Image (tube, rainbow, N blue to C red):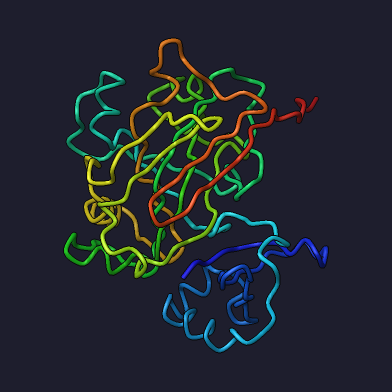
Length: 291
């Protein structure tokens, strides 16, 4: 099942809703009791959404092409990101393989959905691409064991995590370089976990202007998804709708010679086996400094 959050461009009502793709139609699954996908995951889970889809399948729905897709979870409580989590990426940046995950957080407004422009800030030329797998939590918990971790996953999505490299390196904390407004993207949809037999067998590809710049398999993660869920849930409670970004493969612009940064007019795509392709153009952020 492919779940999306969206704004219906036909009605002109600037109100987010959510639903499921059924071929080329989108079936609205929102209810008064659960107006957001995050809320639906918390109250009824993926199985409840599947049952509602079956009940509403006879409805006309709307053409999928008529909506603006948002990040699948537009309002997560937490976006927890992992740095340096592929063996070849650690090698290309001349860093030792870490013994524990490197964790930083991102804010929801640093992401856009499918097809929406990611924004290069005027404060930096070092706007870098990063293809990643995003994991969405469906069942919360604390101190979740690795053995039980995958039972807490609602599904997966593509992410262009992206970084403003010089701001990322202003100090030992990566937060500034990871949270510029609309600098990353998630989507196009959330593919529920039951659709993916073995996530470790998926391939992730990053394309810049149709050229493959990143490519690796999910079995090359230094810290597996169960390990990440166990580690993160040790220090914070995971709740439905939380997003975990699992790290980017080798091939980032920072490590190329010459270095390669995102420019206005570029198109960056993230393709993951079975999850589809996230595609976003790059624009300059034209908001000027306030006096």
